[in-house]
Each structure stands twice: as structure tokens, then as C-alpha cells.
Image 1: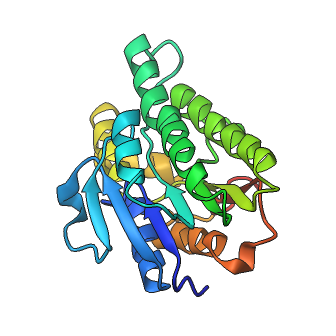
Image 2: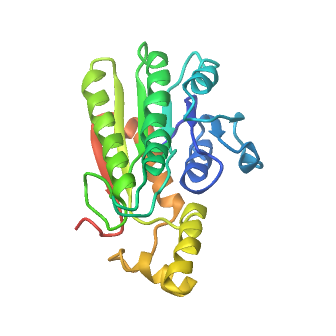
Image 3: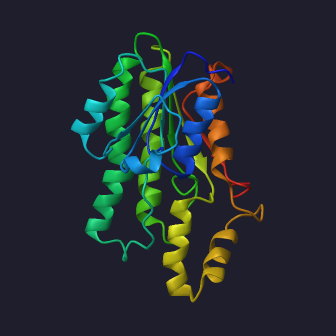
Length: 244
């Protein structure tokens, strides 16, 4: 999956899946420009540039993306997980989930597309199997907005097929990451301990283990490569057997 000479931008590249994606694209030879809300999280990342960007702010997104007259690859990894049913999801929670998970995808993709139209490119968004793919307990806001990300990707794939821009969504199962560990810690307070919280998440995985960010990054690198040039409009599940 040689990405030599490709210019890639990766959002939420400070940790977890986003960090693993940035590192994998760099290893494959891409010139990677990374962003995260917290610039300090990108310390040590061997990217061509690392910029603090609030992906929920369209002006900030446009100012960042406008620095790159050419972009070959975008991997958008921004998201937020709200834990709760619809009754437990207040209006502020819903709007926060909308802003972080769905609006950010709209802002970043909208800014990137004009910089791909002349030569084509690849856009990959990290969605989730908790979406239109499958319902999970206590994932009302998250599932709805990740489903929106998949719908956005499919619509864009149809619109820009003739321009040579490919759009695909990657739907991970439960992946061991700092974000997950934070959710485990919060759940542990309700369930009486970290062991019970870990079991809650492991029980969702038929494979008996959590995924790791590097596994998701490998799929993203494939989608960015010429090996995937015939693939667009797909929602690819990488979930340890959840959707069998």
C-alpha cells in the first residue's frame, strides 16, 4: 500500500484510532498533516504538520484545510460517545453529539472536496457498527449520528463518482483506546468496578477480545491506496464478528 507522494490529512490524530491512522499513513510514505482539538496529544507524531483544530468550528476547519491546495486523502476520525437511552439523552447531549460526530464530518469533507475535484482522491470517515448497521443499548445519540456519517459518505460517493473521488466509511466494533478506557472508568462507577465495566464491553465482542487501533488503521491505509481504486460508497465493518 505505497502512499509515496500522497498528501493526506487526518483529524483527531492525537490518540486512539486517529493516531494509529496517521502513523500508518506516514509509514506508508504519505505526507500527513494532522489535527486534533488538543495539540499536545500529537507530540511525537512524525507528521509533516500537526495543528490544533476544533472540527466543530467551520471557520477553523476551512482555515486549516485552505493551507493545502492539493489533498489526496482524508481520514476523518472525530467523534463522541454519549452513553444513554433516548430518555437519558438530554437536548444538550444530543446537540453535542450532532456537533462533534456529524457536523464535523460535514465541515471537513465539504472543505476537502474542492481540493480533490481536479485529480480525484479518497475520503474515509470512521463511523461505527453502532449506527444504521446495528442497534446497541445506551447508544441513542451515537448510533443516530454515526448512521448519519454513513449516509453522508454514501451520498457524496454518488455525487463525486465522475470526479474520481472515492468515499468510504469504516465501521469498527469495540476498539481498545483512551476513549474506551474513559468510558469504562465512567461505567465502572455505575457497575461497581472496572472488572464489571470491562466485561460489559467484552461481552459485545463475539471474538472474545477488543480490537486495537492499528487494525482499523490498516483498513484506512488500504482505502487510501490505489489497491482500493474500484471501491467507493461502502460501509466496511471491522468488528470482531459483531455483525456475523
